[in-house]
Length: 60
Image (cartoon, rainbow, N blue to C red; front, side, top):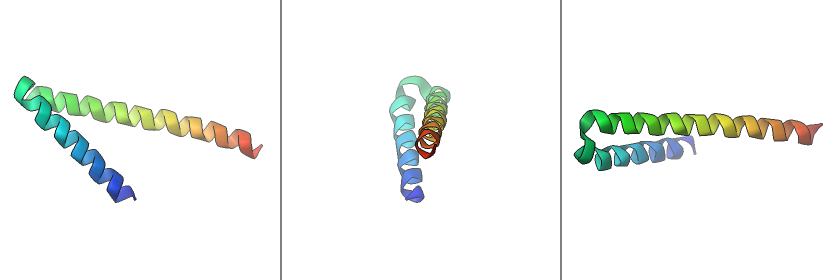
């Protein structure tokens, strides 16, 4: 399952890069992909913390 999610993330960022690259160049497309990665990481951290709090309440 983890490999499927990893492949989907790579495909998403690659697609984002190739869509943005003609309009804003290589550096801009790289920046867009980097921001996309940061947003995904932050969303994962927030959701993980939320799940942890919910689990703690259910277990108590």
